[in-house]
Amino acid sequence: MNKRILITGGTKGIGKAVAVCMAQSGCDLVLTYASDSAAAEETAQTIAQQYPVDVLLLKADISDYQSIDTIQQWIENKNIYLDALIFNAGLTCRDSFEDLHFDDWNRVFFANVHFPVFLLQRIVKRIRPGGSIVFTGSLMGIEAHSVSLAYGVTKSSIHALVKNLVKFLAPYQLRVNAVAPGFVDTEWQKTKPAEIRKNIENKVALGRFCEPEELAGVYKILIENNYLNGEIIVVDGAYSYK
Ligand SMILES: NC(=O)c1ccc[n+]([C@@H]2O[C@H](COP(=O)([O-])OP(=O)(O)OC[C@H]3O[C@@H](n4cnc5c(N)ncnc54)[C@H](OP(=O)(O)O)[C@@H]3O)[C@@H](O)[C@H]2O)c1
Image (tube, rainbow, N blue to C red; front, side, top):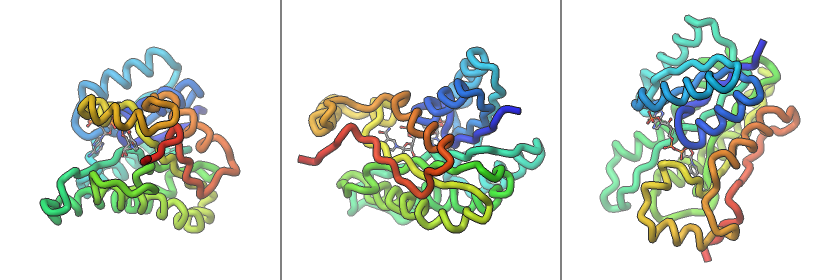
């Protein structure tokens, strides 16, 4: 029987690269996404054509509380058990401090922090003992930055959540870790103006963005190494603000 992994935001960018990497290792997949069904179908078909694994798609917006019920019920109806759960999808809000609205702040907190806590509470018994949870944190949760207050604070919270969840998940024989990427060349970054991208590249010792595929191997190690627990693995190519 293949291992089964659920990846939120698994149809594009970092999540998709992790999905491909784990399919290469023979894992069946559940990939969630927000709205782009065409891209999701294409990702699922491409992976299933290349690797002998089962790929299931589920539309579930992490900014909507109803998605917690949707995912729980879907998993139970299909009688799915997971070996790894990857909380990868995340939201940001780039409004200035002065223009920031409570509803936007709340939406980012709900999606990035509350959603994984309460989904995990609902489906923890659907993750097999020996399995693990991996969060996508961010370098921005470690180095304060000036673009999105809610994003930086929620990513810090994710890192704290990982450390705090360790003891709560030990009775279930589950490990929990996070990857904290620096700047990864996904749609999230590709849409930034050339000048800003150049500034970022100049601050990375390696002089370039990380490719999603380079990052995927870090998730694989966290899923497969049975002694990695409570870690926040920073993957930033040696980034410095100077
Ligand atoms: N890229 C970076 O430089 C970077 C750096 C550090 C951390 N991160 C973190 O990495 C994670 C993935 O980012 P990415 O760069 O791979 O993004 P991406 O390329 O834009 O991919 C986003 C994926 O997440 C899904 N998604 C977006 N909003 C969602 C929502 N509200 N509910 C459910 N799914 C949603 C998308 O589905 P649809 O296509 O249907 O919208 C898609 O599958 C995020 O948590 C982000 O904070 C990224």
